[in-house]
Image 1 (cartoon, helix red, strand yellow):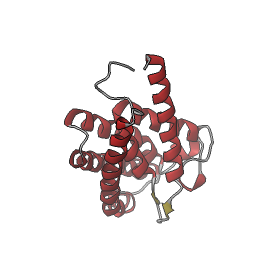
Image 2: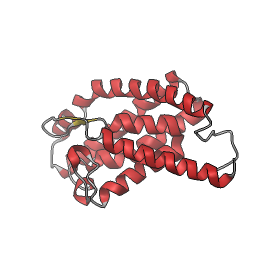
Image 3: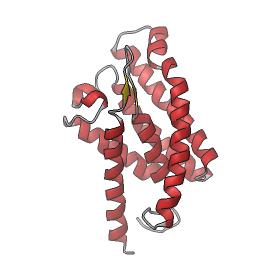
Length: 189
């Protein structure tokens, strides 16, 4: 397959994952400060399946689409106000989250065990970004930010990390066996 075909394929897959993140963002459980959403599950899936480069790129595409006002963020919101509001830290935190998950897996191997570890680490990265941002932008105490933006998400975060790992590795294997996913052993793109 030519290099241009591989690049086109990966651009399409990246865009598809940006759309998946937007769809899963609409799966929400409302909480007082920050809702539980399917975004982190989708971020974990993107990074587990696509790796660091394309997983992170899918997050950047998602954030770009939302930043221009398309309602792809949680609860059908969009625009710069969402990025720079009290919950914007979680959105911004998705960038290093995806990169770290993908990078960890590229360095250790795409196995379910490593994917669970990578996704749990990613969960802590996203929660840390979000909690610090929430503290600053919502003018909360550290205790208030932790109790409203970190602690309520730990159990569900571990469950989503395990799901992203299990589903992600399974889908990745199928996509690779069907030659629908770029392999890090290939020389392009």
